[in-house]
Image (cartoon, rainbow, N blue to C red; front, top):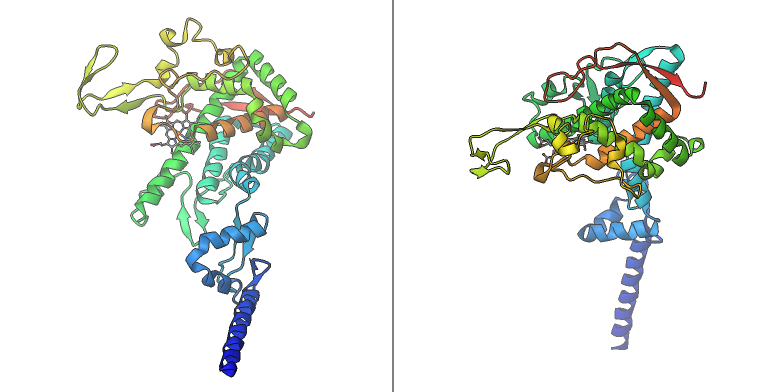
Length: 387
Ligand code: HEM
């Protein structure tokens, strides 16, 4: 009897030791061990039934960021992170980095060589690169010295992306994943054309309103630490009230989507007294709406960023029913905040470092289209403020 009990205890001790050894084999202080060839696969397989909780434990032990090693040569390593600082960098780091590495070198080159540049082309290329970085994680570098023609973009596993005939590519039959195709087309178009249009009109309208430009310069010098580099801009972006107001005022005059068609789902009477039904196509004239005396007052033809600033020096939020550039309702723009961040960061980096001189005597007018591009763009000379 005693011998059997001792034997049973022996098995128990051996089993406990075996389990403990397994634990030590696969983990080191709660973090999976990486073994030659197989990496951390055993630890992950053993915890497959509670993977999310296990990853949370590992991240807790690793101060929020952890490098997972998969099988050797299988390209399955990844960096797991739950660190809010990293999230911030992933989302917001892209914009200042792209400004620093893409936009500034071009402006520097144009300034040094005394060249003139088409601002519309410049901003379209900047927005296109940013959109593809955000949607595909790939930088086509269309914003490079000499404005190269991007014929074909090879991305990862040899998928091809046409850049400036992007729509042609997206509508090819081989692109079978319709959802992905529609999503990427939507994002790239929503991103590229809108931001570049506003920035082009913004710098043109600023050249006609030197007082407003001066106030922006003063605001930037007051709020931004130039010494820390332009990467500081995002930290202080909410303080740039006058710049924000000047961009709103540009959007009021030049909404990138100048009109939209809508059709009612049932018969109704509009507040103006007009009867509409399922067959009526309503043209919502956003461009005209921003220039109506009845909506914006007698001074509606003046460029006045002050109309967007409250007595307390805060941004005045106009309801979408009055300021329609981003539409309203369930189909309202999803990228409004991102758009303001990008436009403010770009405008601030340029105005802090350079003086843009629009070449006089140009015929600047909108191209008749669903998007409010300029017909020929606008040519400008760029001078460095450091000289
Ligand atoms: C100044 C910049 C921008 C303006 C003026 C603008 C304006 C608009 C407008 C008017 C619509 C409604 C279109 C319609 O219903 O037919 C829209 C939709 C949309 N926008 Fe923007 N946009 C801007 C920037 C962005 C950015 C940077 C993004 C990127 C993330 C974005 C993402 C979207 C998306 C995804 C939709 C479709 C929403 C839906 O259909 O549910 N937009 N935008």
